[in-house]
Length: 356
Ligand code: SF4
Ligand code: SF4
Image 1 (cartoon, rainbow, N blue to C red):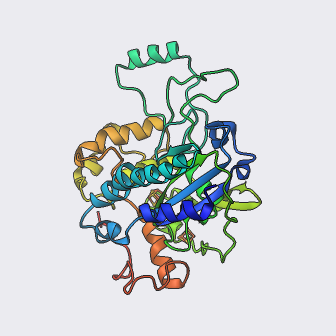
Image 2: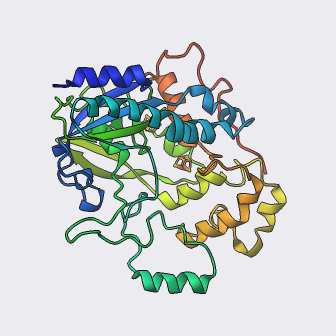
């Protein structure tokens, strides 16, 4: 019978940086719409793989010199090319051993509930939604959910089911969630992406991470967020198995705008005059003049997407504030990134901010 050690060795050989194995009972208490056991009810095990983000992929944003490499290499490249190839290899080994490998690459906005906050997606009937779209004379609205989905059989969750990737990585014993809501590992801090295989192979699970806390609760991620999207005090708490996971309350829609477009002081691609003019109030959200909601996000995206047109199928990161702040703090103050590199990520003291 195939063993956990053989699976992990195959994952590392195929190109994963870390591999951990979780027991699916650790998802007890997950909302049904996000419970991976609904995907493949006969599955017994989840295999989690970590793919590191090279620190240097952040260098251009850290210096304010190159913004294309991070989203294209560290989102597009890892999620679309590198990780799927590794999933195939490990899946081959499982299926050659007589077990099924349900591969699940990194994705987003595919569930019947929002992948940002778990809120229910469209409650309109498909007919009503068609009417809305026809009236709006636009493409399908951008809801972070699948729009027309309905359960294929009674009692099932509507497809596509999308589970919480970062919590699944915790369930595989690979690390912890930081205050920033980023997933942290002892090996790479916040610098990784993850992908999974669900299988009916009865593999021995790894224990949940029990080492020293990976998050220093330093709040550098809160301070360096250009949109003040992360709360310093209010938190979200959930359990994976018996492990408490806690992170700061995040305004996900606000982050969605700032992460991609940065705001007046952090987006060198949009002229100052555009921020000053703020035509039709389209930039109110980024200018701190309104609450974040889907309609305001759409205004921002429509107004600014032309200023950085070469998208790679992913939103183009202008921000990376929390991830760079976290790396920088963990390097300086001690923690999982300490002494990993000969020189720190941040050599100039403070992160840049445009004076305008
Ligand atoms: S990605 Fe940017 S906008 Fe979002 S929480 Fe992190 S620092 Fe804030
Ligand atoms: S910046 Fe500090 S508080 Fe935020 S996730 Fe990293 S270690 Fe935790």
